[in-house]
Image (tube, rainbow, N blue to C red):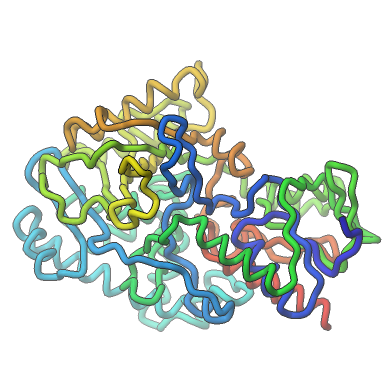
Length: 512
């Protein structure tokens, strides 16, 4: 292995690969060191099912929504994206449902038949306001961040500046209540999919509005604001980034865990005893692992306090499933495209708000909730290329919230029972679902930590309740060491902006 490079990138997640690609195209000698045997971080396509070994699935991240189109153009990359239409399905255990798609007339008909005209107007007003905020905020994602208040002043139209600041700083519940939905079920659906996803907080938690804003920033071409499926799974995103980086001259070495980063002279020390000296080191690992590599004792107290303030437990349980056939929903027995959408399993109207609060209270107490919020999807209905020869479907339950540590018991003792319990919830909406499950690959928060190398299993590295300049800066206090983590601006998810922005900072610093 070479002992010298211009830049060492630690970690081959999507942000690290974006940084490597940009730096290599700048003519710098770049080496990427990845501790796992495969590149991709949490954006991987794997075949994890022992009983159904030919079935592929996106084990971690499962949709592409937030990668800026300007970044794709700058990288000169095209992703094999497939639009989901419909993109949301809200079933109930009775006859009511909502199927959100491009057919606005059909959507309005469902709103009026199953909910109310007031709910339809509230939905239209919400979507209109979010579209304006999305347009205003978009340019900030590929720039060094300002504070939330400065961002409002510089980028957001005057009529929405106060709305923007309140959305970023306050609970998602306060934001959604402004639109006067009559249906608690609709409010819960929006809060769950965009406010709570990957975040340690609920309806009343300050900062959940920031997460809501982030999740509504999809601007991919042809998406109409809806997150898209990547043909071939999420591993196709990181595979294309890796191939482009290698073509530009970068070297990617997997199975090479880094032990430490030392300054003066700047060097990366590997667990196998190797050492690479560099002009700059860009770390794709989360902020806590970055600090471990540098050493807490080598960093200023204020920086350590900042990182300590980010620490939250991951509360996401990803239950990957192999299905022998498609389920059948009581409220919508025929297949109208709902399986390719995000299907929201929530308690019915009278109970939903109380059940959400009860679930988060359980998690804070270390208990597994009776009815957590669940997003369910079957992406092989849209991308059949991942199916095996026997025709199995991949599927998954994205469960929010669960505790990282269980009080009075362990995940090892409870996992199998709780997976059965979650499938039992699916059975309430689509009877017989449990019988269709050929195999499972569950990822509890501790398993997410081990499988993907993310501290405390937090899928966004840092809660998206931290926004803009409140997130981890790209430049660390150690000269020549940078972060391109999802814990940096703009947010956690498969975005790539942190990799871009960190690379731009490195180029400015190296080239003066």
